[in-house]
Image (cartoon, rainbow, N blue to C red):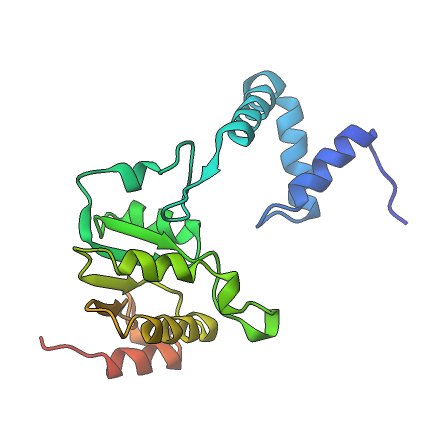
Length: 201
């Protein structure tokens, strides 16, 4: 039976770090030890940053993004294309699209996807607010930037049905061969999607 090798405070730090995505028990121990060794340059500033973040971070009541102001920085940006609304599953997807610089529109975070097996139903998602925002004057397109999973595609179909009564174009992200990808390394589903959604050269 494994025994604790440090005091309860250090063990608690390790247990909390192990809850983070991508960190297992061993990685959490290494991270905790690194933080302790670099207490002045890393542990203390990190604890201060986490305290401030905990006090100031809020969820944007308009789009569902996280920021230190409500409405968030993106919703307040007048340079955004107000005619396009990009729907994402989670804030991490919003941040990924922003990093890419591929779109300069407004966003809407659903807070998940429909998943009957996990008990996630339409009322658990930020769908009513989405319909209200898509109904606003000037909105002409809703881009469904949802993951290409079964639950993601089910949610996309559900949203499309919700928006059929509105005069907006509903589009989705293309799926298929990634830039720089080699056909030999792609799975059958990706290849099938690429063939079905082929475009003129």
